[in-house]
Length: 268
Image (cartoon, rainbow, N blue to C red; front, side):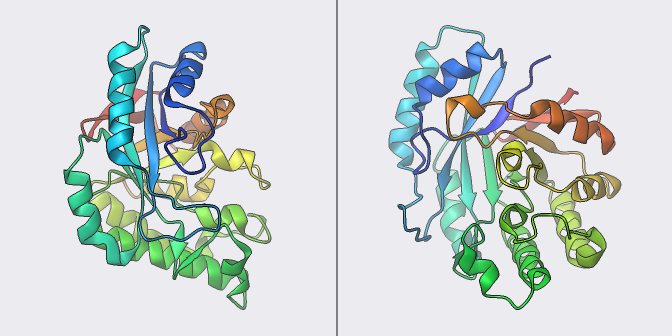
């Protein structure tokens, strides 16, 4: 069975490599029933390789043209990935209300002005544990502040770039803050995703860590999506067999797809 990929970036994202059309064609070739484009909107973030702010009007125009002209049993959904920072609550509330998104991902790339993907982040802390703790605390703060997203993407994104990889990760060391984060998301009706992008990174595993995914389910979490985080055609739906196994092992029997910001549960 083929599953929906709900985290895809075309070249409307600064780091995307292929067009909307090429990404859709690849999804059709792979037999996917649905994909959701989720272009980067990291407002007020400064990267050495560009500004990660999608031209949303141009993106919507290109998406609408593709959706109107596609001649295949592939459903296209219109989404966005918001780079959450505490001072952007009002900005993103207004932004999201101005566009007909099917799915809004929230993500934490920037913490205290630093992207955890760059060495500067971990080098700013005396220990790796302190860096991880600060990252999770920042996510908790954003989860408490923001309500304009549906899914918190790659919940332990920072661990992709931790010096030790995940060899030293122990949920119990961060249990208080992670439990608070997961409970906040559940109480607010927000979900998380199983993101296969980490499989293509040096540490070769999913985001989030299996212990986080399992704990989300134990606490009553049910809303979960699957996303490849593809930035090129070859990575669409990559690693989905591993993602589905992780979901089953964590006690999930359903995953979700989003249309018009509403979750629909589909059996795994």
